[in-house]
Image (cartoon, rainbow, N blue to C red; front, side, top):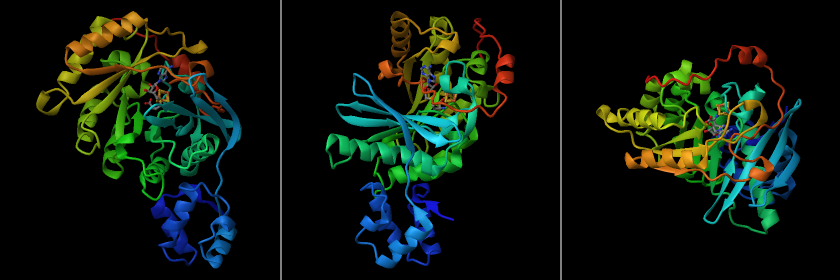
Length: 376
Ligand code: SAH
Ligand code: SF4
């Protein structure tokens, strides 16, 4: 049996080296070759002992993902479609900005949460990605970009787990990948610059705080349960009161002193002044001792896709909503849409996955969106 070394964080690689009868410290050198230099050929890792290299060739390999396509947007955003085998493909997006380079990484082929406004959710779920498949997205993007741009320094400074899939429903594979991103011998990213975005898998939010506290974004999208149950079906299992309590607990471990709440603006569904007021009230009562919760609001204009049946809020409605929150003292930003011309914007990542769930049945059970405003 041979093993893809992209599957391991440094700790895992040390254990693997030991299993080959090698000293643990050799793993560090190997890890640096793989992640810092992007090397996959053991023969070119010239400062590793010949005997060690020989064992590696017998028992291991370093392999990224097969690229199906790569598209560059007029604003410099790049979207890759990577094959993960058996008819499944996932997407990864690079977003260059003047002061940073952000990579949006996928965690699953498809997603089982099935949010109403998300094109990944509409595709259904095929399978969890392995740690190697999550890490490979960064490994490939970083080293391809360095080559393309003729750079030797780091290109990607930020990672957001906001591609396809719910990262906290693939926890076991997520953690080694995050640790590799953070490791000084790996990508050396700051905890504040690695963000896990979740639709609200409450128990795993607590575990993440313990195991690998990185920045956290919570996809809220509705200020009351009746509406959130429909937009984000996971809310039925973990309702708002539990989600807000878990967000508060996370602050004890978070590398930043706030939680980011994401709110996808859907015309006539969650973008009315009454929704903004309910959101203000929800946050005001969710902090310590019934005080306000320390957070930032990120409003995302809905990126439409044909099957959604939903409409993006007008720019005016988004501005009005943002101003109402700001007046109430909440730090609120409106997300710029990037890579629109190549369908690389938030929620447009559809990849191509084979649904292995009873999606059709779930869709038939989907309730209509209630328009009445009932506080939860
Ligand atoms: N599953 C995780 C992370 C991936 S989705 C989560 O839900 O948080 C990343 C972000 O894109 C989430 O905030 C999600 O709600 C948002 N999103 C999904 N579909 C969208 C769409 N069509 N338009 C705008 N944002 C969308
Ligand atoms: Fe899954 Fe996130 Fe899309 Fe919801 S928004 S279906 S949790 S990827």
